[in-house]
Image 1 (cartoon, rainbow, N blue to C red):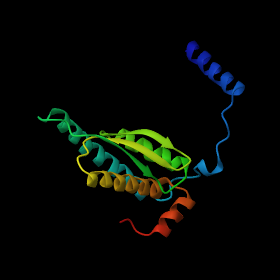
Image 2: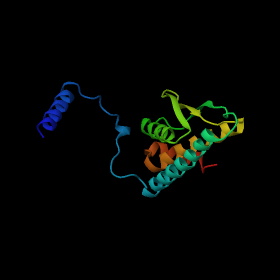
Image 3: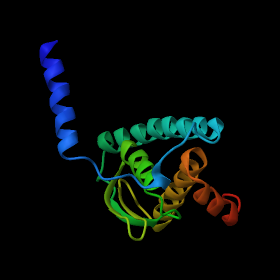
Image 4: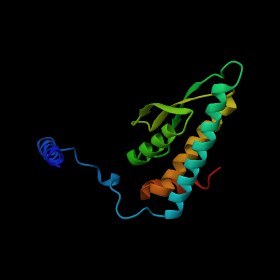
Length: 157
């Protein structure tokens, strides 16, 4: 118990000496998410995509024959929101078979390493999937400006 209290005291002392930079007002979330239904849809998509991607990666690992080629693709997101970009990137990293290799904040571009890409059409399918994920994140957790951007763009293709 004493060690825990000393540890908490040290953390608080360090935080007072070196405070974190202020968070931009747009990054603050006030209250609960706008529509809980969209949060549930995002979570359901994430669980389903994780299961199907895990099965796909497992099959690629054990199937006979040469391994399919991999690719690194650039996907430019619609939003400039740090929160939306971060959640989108984290969701992509958590799903087996994809990895974020770089995030270029100035252009809102994610560079994604994807396993098992055999054709150009599969690259376009991955791009559309990333933009659909961004749309889900904006609907569930996005700020008013991002939701306005989606409304101007129209329904999902």
